[in-house]
Length: 107
Image 1 (cartoon, rainbow, N blue to C red):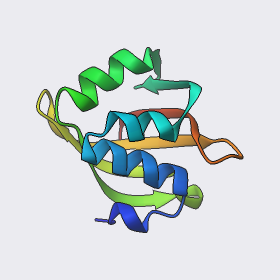
Image 2: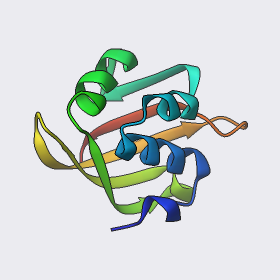
Image 3: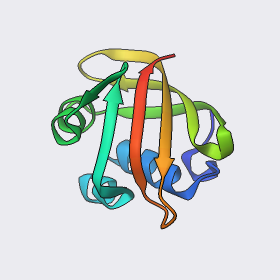
Image 4: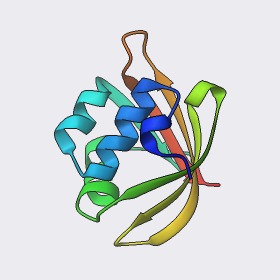
């Protein structure tokens, strides 16, 4: 596993660190105000999805690998609702270093 502090892209590093800390304020700061996301190819409401899948269910990302300059991850993701699953994550990052879109799904 890759320690989140060692992730290549600073925006992705902030995203993963915030998820693993359960820190909603740091998570929001890692995103652009108009950030979007998809889960298994379907666009989702980011506030609803992150509350349900990350923050109220103890979501945690154990990064197995990274590619595309750190903007593509394979993660063993776990939460209290679904248990653990291997997932793929892709991130679009703005020039100012925040995540504008993330996509996740089964790996």
